[in-house]
Length: 358
Image (cartoon, rainbow, N blue to C red; front, side, top):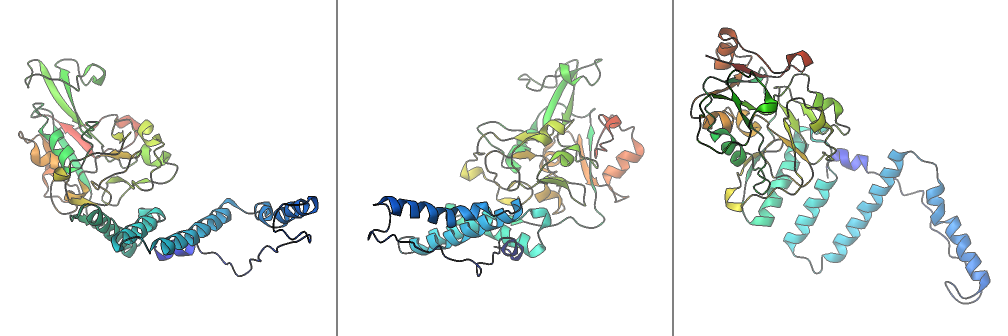
């Protein structure tokens, strides 16, 4: 448990007074006679019920509850140590510490490393295999941006497949962070008439293709509506989610004007031999049931100096990614030399995802 968490859940028990046993002389410790029953009621009122009669703030009440749980967990851990193996005890301890960790955004670097180390160790205990998980922070003088060449996209969906595999997305529900919209020529960008689930040879005559995903806005409305601060914008422009802090209310999903958020209704299932073990805490690590997911510009790759998986997989070169603050980057060249546009610019969300045509 982190130092901040310990402080958060600290409780001074020195002033607690034990409930005194009362006796009516009948020789029994409970029940038996009418006078003893009356004393039992008095004891309950004087002792147990008084705990709940004390006026306290919700935060104080939560502290006391958490402290009680911590004491109970220690007792359970001790009592079970006789029959539990070392690995089981370690797994239980890891799970306990993960359960009560703080919001990742507020953690120190040491605390970030500690939670990553716990998750790596937990995976090893469960599967006997190892993975590489990063907690790498945003670098200075880096602001990620993306451009999509509508003229080049042929609707092959290699980008979608690569994204699913790279980001450990659920195979059962066929979750996809990226949408490829097949649109009719001459109809403009009419998403209401677009086909997002076409099953025919591409490119289809008389159609063009346009991809959407999370646009990593500079003014993301999804962040503003989150009641628990489980999603936020990082310094390099990435809008991320702390899956362990998310409560699954889906407010962010409703607030996003670009259909960039996904909610997992069941625990994501990925065959063990298909799990991408190169992970980032804020990216493609394995998620639990009932939380929001989204494109992170493959934070596990982009912060390691690589292109997102969709960019690397695109067979036509329709996708361009890079550092907007680097004057020599390809993304900067596109913005300076092409007629670019963004979707729903009038909303003021400032998405860092541009479209252009040759």
